[in-house]
Length: 261
Image (cartoon, rainbow, N blue to C red):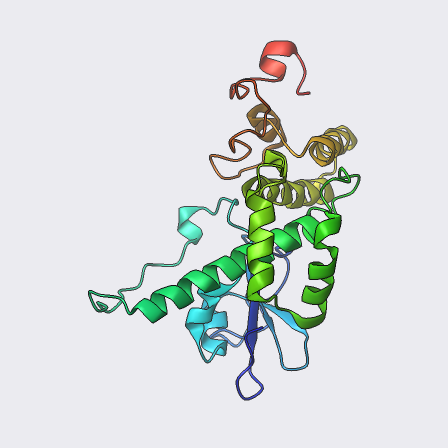
């Protein structure tokens, strides 16, 4: 685990938060800003407590802001309006040739983040979706997950083991990282829509989609559109997730069969 410096903050992950959540830091106005897009960086203090921060606030809190690039990102398959994106900052020109040691360190950090993200997706985030199919939680990862919960980190050998499992031909396409990210993102968005809806019929429809997602770990483009869920343009299109047959067309569902299922 990246250690806190002088009792400072440890960056843990980028994740979804309730849009009503307030940033732990205070902006220039001395008020806690919110997260209208429902995404935040989660930082851990020296006592082990986790708090949400906006990107700029997280950078200001960290002794090494570059560490934010090394945390697992569980929001990658979400869609954020361009107006909500921070303005691009001019970065000083770096050296033309990158130090081989720095390149290896960056590669190892990226692999560590990918392994942790896959581990937590399978053993915690997607595994916690109500009525999800039991194949998501993988017994072979139980010991590694238990150690990660205790220490907050995984050893290089465990990183290699987790990535080998994710990439193994025996791992079904629906249980690979990208599709699990799609499942987690759709789950979060469906939960928000259900909580905000005041229509009994709409709540029933959204819950039926949620149950379908839990059982099958996929949603069609028609189902996403009917629910009003905005996701990554390539959501649920990973290679092989629809089986050996061709991927379903974007217009599949009620437009052809009279049913979204």
